Length: 51
Image 1 (cartoon, rainbow, N blue to C red):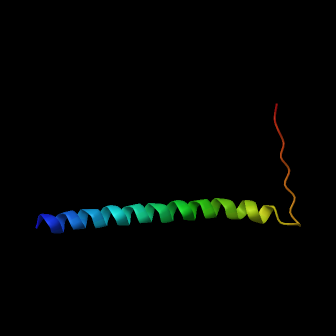
Image 2: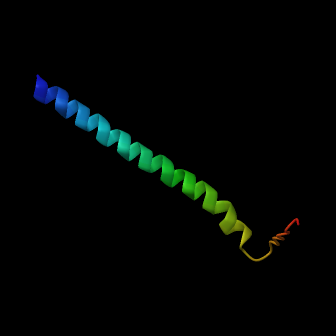
Image 3: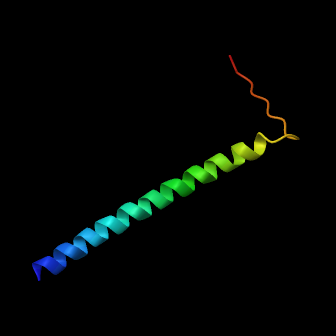
């Protein structure tokens, strides 16, 4: 019984780790995509600095 519980706990931890990695990768891709689209020709980006 203990071995089954331990296997279940390890499986849960592994799945949690994998899901976290997928979520982080998706968030990074979602952040990079607009920046990539803005860098394509035809777009203009102006950066101003307020002093």
